[in-house]
Length: 149
Image (spheres, helix red, strand yellow):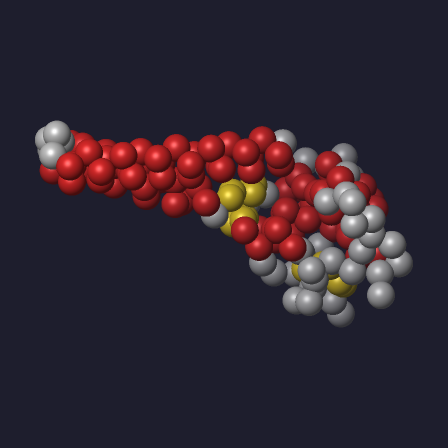
């Protein structure tokens, strides 16, 4: 049981705060145990004690744990909820739906340039479905990314 009674009305990111959120994303990105000094270095923190504060905060939420070497890693049983829908590269977070948006956009562009558009029922239908899908995916990418910043 967590030492924090998590408020179900607030998403985890709001409970953690911006810097602790960045520490969590960094831990998710490295996918291996990492020390406080390395976290501080990666995130440009003033000292490793600042990193330790945020790491201990994550530990109090039962999101991360400290191994025998004194390094921190995300717990395998941590309930990260919506965070499963993201990829972590360095200390950046990328919504998985971005890749769907890119693929659909590529297909629409390929269809428009190489297949050629004619005003047949099939051509109009294919292009309409493609454009609607493309707009939907990019709107979702924008919505998700703007909610994280």
